[in-house]
Length: 295
Image (cartoon, rainbow, N blue to C red):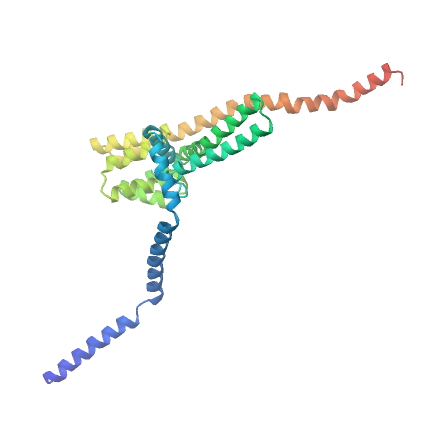
């Protein structure tokens, strides 16, 4: 084969390959990527242009709020799962705004009735408006920690099965977090992300313990850290921890069952027994009154 013909053939193959690669590109995926990138730029630009007042309020509130109180709010946010709709800066800006709304309502209450009791009510409304975000975060954090406590035994069983099947502990964490739902699965994802960005396993596990107030999670993290430090088989640690968590879950259920009669006592006394007395003794009382009145 002559050399010019071979060169022309190679050029044709190269051009055909280039054309095929250009024509076979998934345009929908490219458009989706460009739309996502553009959306991110647009949203950030809009956020920068439309949140000037909010940023000003956040800076002012951060300067006026003591550092210890800011750390306490950050702790409450961590226990509540750091909701995306309520970052720390927005929370600091919302507290004085709600306090001002409470002050306006309190002033309206005092203007209608300037009695000492109404002044106390107005003061309570102001304090309630300022502390309302704290109460909401505290309630959400308590619910989240309770849910973590409930999800922990099942998650440990999944980890034990995965490790005994041959997976590494990080792979077992990834599988448990992907298959699970709820706050504990989110915390496992956060722990894996911490290790991916460069934190050591010990720091990531201790961070998991710091983001919760559940004693069972702290015990589990401490056992994992000690096993990693001393080279103990992780399957043995998981087996012991899973068994202990199941026992604690059964004990909590028994404890709640023992508390049930005490909790039911007050509704019985104040709501059910009076109705029963009225239904049973009511006709007898009516007949007695009718007899005594001579009717």
